[in-house]
Length: 381
Ligand SMILES: *Cc1c(COP(=O)(O)O)cnc(C)c1O
Image (cartoon, rainbow, N blue to C red; front, side):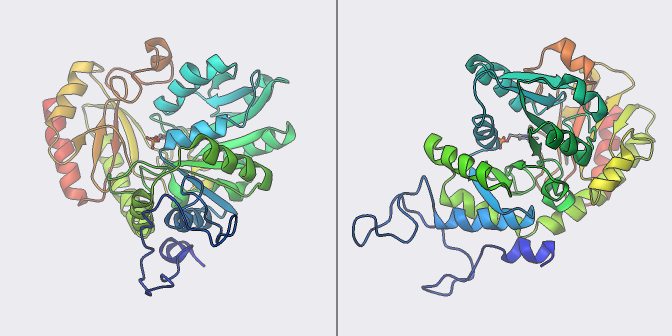
């Protein structure tokens, strides 16, 4: 089956009792057993819920993976992945990482003795020199947040395999519609399903997909033992969102392209970061591993000050100033003061997150309205 058909049908059958075409929201915490231990695979809802199982199977199908596991947030999924490790183990991660992942790694897991190295993996060849006997995992986001760097997944995975490391891709920005890391050999794909998968800014959820039997067993054990599993209402919402993922992504991409070109030609704009530009340093890698270039764009202003970025962000009328991304509505964010505020200033500037840097999550409204809105707000910057 192709992507759009899987998005609508995978994991879902008409309800056996009524024929309802939509998977019911099984709002239950437990399941009745005929005799002790005699149940239909469902014993207690932290471990398993039919609405969640349908969603997990659908997500696995979209990522071409054998297994899917859902979590109550993207951070819940990331937390479970790091819990595969032991004290003393080390993770090598991309440097301009989602701020929440950076915070969890450095403020929560560092004190349990897990070590993290943050490196620019834009050229993966440098990676080998950093691998030590402690290194157990490579953690990659691509496109990165918010600098839209592209990391060559296949090249990274080959290094991970050579050194017997677990490779993890946070695939939130691309979504399975644009990029399938499992096909490129990655061990684990994680998502903040809050973003493109849910797609309507009405639910917080996370997910992991893998085809690796042993890793799946461990991750499912951690999910049930630690308990960051989502409820059936949220599972239903993400499943409904998924049904239009392919249609939404096409519009995110075409709007993104139009907005990126508009910004590039605007006299007040400094740099524009979008992997679709031929001059993007890893444009060819993006072209190779992604179906299209997505709706995420960052840009700086020639007047590189917090004040001009703030004036622009607060004059937007169609774009809303808010954290998050991947919803139908367009958002603008200021990483230095919002998503990346927990990253020390020197590190922030080093990775390119200057005071005026703004990040757009281009929604699926009409292209002309989005460009007009940016034009009027740039006048005020
Ligand atoms: C939002 C996000 C997360 C965290 O997901 P939540 O659902 O907010 O917990 C992780 N990685 C990336 C790239 C994100 O954008």
